[in-house]
Image (cartoon, rainbow, N blue to C red):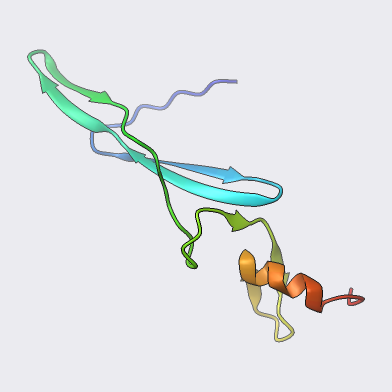
Length: 87
């Protein structure tokens, strides 16, 4: 199913890929040009937004620390090996 949304000149579009192994987020801002008949937009280049650790993808993992803090991404993935047998 194809979807179409109107994006005003200068607005940003955000795409989120929620993968089963890794997830990523990218943003794209239209490049707006003025022509004799008015404004029209031409698609810009998508830019992947790095996570807090600087990586372009984030592991699709969530976990809770022993103190109950919600962990997301790489730090949650690191907890997998420490939680053996705990359910």
